[in-house]
Length: 249
Image 1 (cartoon, one colour):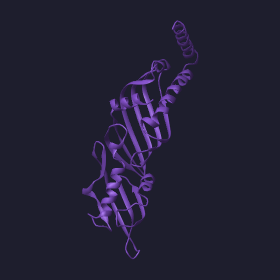
Image 2: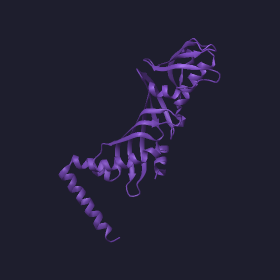
Image 3: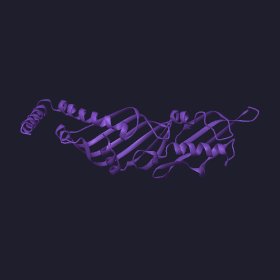
Image 4: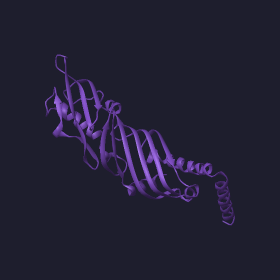
């Protein structure tokens, strides 16, 4: 114990000199270490991904104290429990406080998320699937402007003839954790409006992004579509995220 305090003072003095001499460069060295520690915990705290990137903009002395004003997390191809790959997951954390000695998160002030899902990812999830008793082929999904989602394909008859079908409607927020294709504004061609094919695609798309499956509670605030992708955004329950971070070893 007697040797630990002088050593600790030496580390602090070296840090002060580093900050004075190297300025921004030293800030990045300190922050990179913190970024790596956070990045290593993400697969267990959030879920598997092709890669995670973490960025911290912070004064080095604040980082040494474990206090981070802004932490940005970006995940590519994050595995969602429904089987859907989230093309991009962006999380902004505010006022994060970490016990650097115990290596535990003590406080998260605010957490917000943005999820991006591409047509390709949903196409892959739907590929080869059909309601019981039906055969479907050439199924394609497309996102358009004004929150529009369209599914096209062919329904195969007993004579192996493909009958084209199309269903289209706007996506909206249905609850704090769920989106839906607005049933009041659906446009359906080639299949019964109350049939199994319609219900299959509607429920499959909606359930694939049911945010109750997210590792921690979230509050969905908006859903929008652009050409080729859908974007969901909202807030994350900071207390639950904190509890999960504290449990992660």
